[in-house]
Length: 179
Image 1 (cartoon, rainbow, N blue to C red):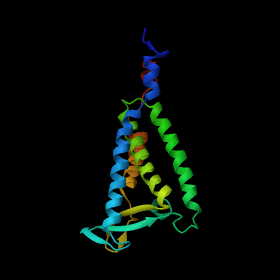
Image 2 (cartoon, one colour):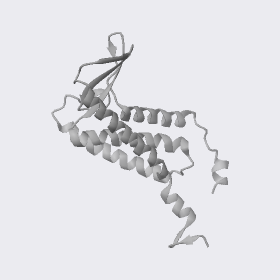
Image 3 (cartoon, helix red, strand yellow):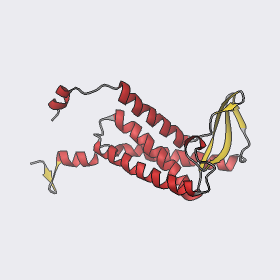
Image 4 (cartoon, helix red, strand yellow):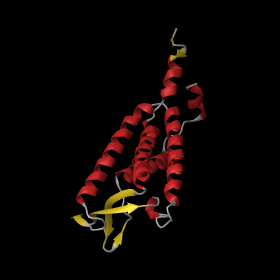
């Protein structure tokens, strides 16, 4: 009667939740690590290579967090960001697990955050810094260099914020009807 190994079908589905979306996170992690290795092999540290006006490839090491925050720390920030990132990844994984896989509007941004976060976590754990190489600029102003993982994190955050502020909200009647 819907039971297999003592677990009801709906309970099994809820235990899995959005975890099938993690395939996308793995793709993002692989692409991120691959592009970073290309950058390390092809670029001289700190020497920009023009791609198109407004975009250079420039290899840099980020010892801090977003936008180089705490980049000048004495080394403690590596461990701080490793622990913080690890805890955030665990929380995001649990959130994804509890989200039905059909909720792409939540699963997709969570997956981008997880993939990007783990991509940078790998760098920080093995190297002590994050490899960045995308250099967007205008005239003499340069945005802080970033990588594919950072792009995934940024898009994931923007999507979650968009959903929170502009997404379709379930009414109390709709929620009661799904129970």
